[in-house]
Image (cartoon, rainbow, N blue to C red; front, side, top):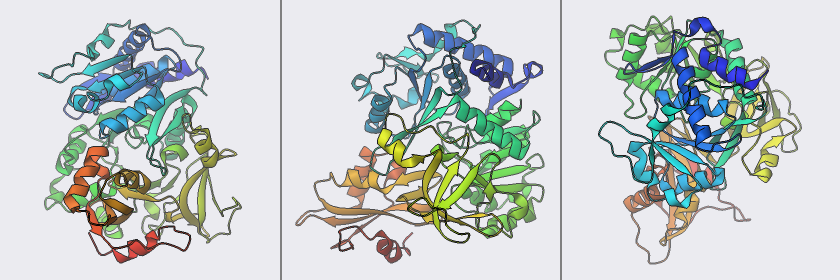
Length: 517
């Protein structure tokens, strides 16, 4: 398949008959048809080329959810460049690392994110910063206006030099060694992941999908949204900040949303509304959810209140296929403790430390293989070799299969905390706190959280004679890390339990502080 044909058809909804149909729409009402999306992405693509972007060059996207995000993403794909989808919650130093690691040539950013770029813009290889400004927002003097992208030609020539195996996106994931890694997605990865979902859930041009997460995350674009667009349906984009479940439910009602992705804490907020019975959600066919198991009471209450809505619980990871397994709605009660079965064209196996498959019912590491598994990590060959072995992605998660072929997650081999839909790696926070002059030892663990499932807890041994408060630790982390990574709780101790070889025994700390929330 010619990849430019694929990217163009994606923007057109795979049918010229859909050209006047809405492709993407913001919750407030601004919308582009498939024809407009195609023309605008062509304009962006041609202007990016004029600005010096060539095949293989990286273009950073530091934007809130908006129509322009989709236009840029298709434009970058059309010229064979690589989109670097940046988390707008990152600090200046974290952004500086990502831009230098990716060697991004251009960065498109939202005007409200100037403060994160201002301190570091001159320390990166970026040639042009393009600012998408809100009304009355000032564009900094070191940037150009995003509006120049609309001055490109709206006609796009075929790019036959682009191959399906060429990278189209880098998604930076938190690293166990304290530094994020850029997971590489090719055109092939994106095409197959969309295809796998379309096969599994039979999306059609009549579907209206709603994103509730940030578009820098696969859970908002690659999950559900792109496969629905692939079939010619419509995608509704919710705004990035100020999540409000009542507003989200109003969007579902007003836009006749048929499928959406809600994290478990969002579902809990929805079901705890005192006026939940007042919402008319007849259009909503399926809620997809993942990151953490959905509590049985929530499944029962949803079934009772909204029998027309099915809940699909999913499991996956950015580099190992974002949705690799799913639990169908009909299995929610009997198999609700599992994440279901592998998706079409997806293989999952459970292995021991020697990569030998373990018997059914035994716990081992989860490995995933499919045409939608990442190609590896950007410029990190050793990390790539450790994670991707003979076409299989080593997830670092522990699990087991039952006799019926359902996968249960048994824990995390990687030292990771899952909070509010975000992956938080302990090593990254520990690396920051060890730089504090008052910290002698630190161990980061996850503690139960009633809303976000898990929260970050810092267990700290202070240096002799040092003074340090919980608030000082939290503020220090906020200076050096994205806010969602900061500890919710800080505990000061005289010593941290270790094995004879010196390894921190975090399971003791988790048990000791499991009552804290």
